[in-house]
Image 1 (cartoon, rainbow, N blue to C red):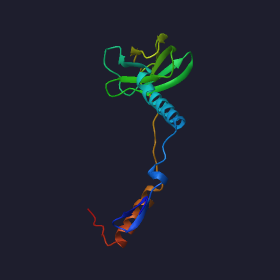
Image 2: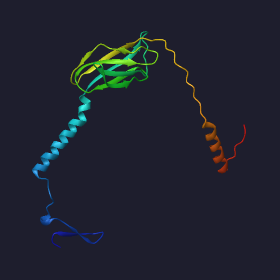
Image 3: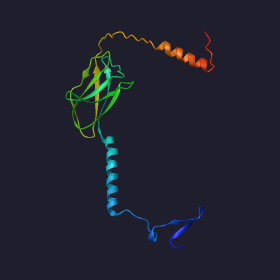
Image 4: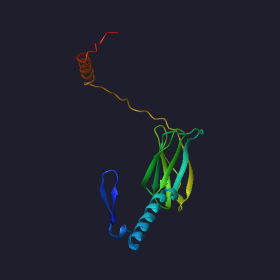
Length: 169
């Protein structure tokens, strides 16, 4: 059959390129694909080597302050922020080397800003923030709804239509 073989299932010839040679990458294509792979590997691995600021927020008695907002500042400009976990811990990825400070904010505590600190390439800086509690009075929140009753009446009507009777308690 020459340079064709038969597909045993469909009984159709399987075409092969001339001389049974499949196209191959040229050296130029190989260098380009290697360069693309190297760039992708660099982009993927760079966050692992990034600089970080880690730490925790405590009150003056030494208890942790959970769910506080911790902002990363460069001068007076906010770069990023994180929320402390239930143990008062935070972890912020710093975009570039430089001098930064942190500000911790939470209801019931004074906004606290740390002294400036240096972050170098690939470094993880540990920071402990002590926040002072402050008495604060929150205003009342009144929630009202005019649609609530209509919504329930609509549900009740649909349930009756579907054959589910509503029995009084």
